[in-house]
Image (cartoon, rainbow, N blue to C red; front, side):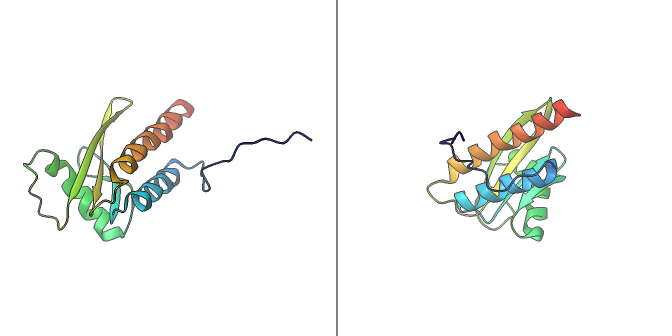
Amino acid sequence: MVQHDWHERRLRRSDDPITALHYQLAYARHHGGYEALVLVDASGTLVAGAGAWPLCEELAAYAPLLEHEDGRAPLRGPVQLQRLTIEGADVLLAARGPANDSGGAAIDGAAVGCRRILMTRARVA
């Protein structure tokens, strides 16, 4: 029998893109030390999130507005935003809470993961 020396780093997987996005965001939220991490469309509609649901909904609603402000937010705590374009659609990753030292890498990793999940789904559809 052939033995492989690789280790699957993703412990939780799903063929459902919304569940897969949640797993991706939950991992990044934990890794980055955020209170909440959400993926939202340009109108503020929550696509997927990780964290307390009311906080995710609030963060999603404000994310498009925060992108165009001077950094002052009506939300408690710091917010980080990252814009992504996937298959021609603009979406935002928004994270709330004081990130730990891995925060920047966590949100960058979440961006890569979200793009991979959504691009894979677009090719299948």
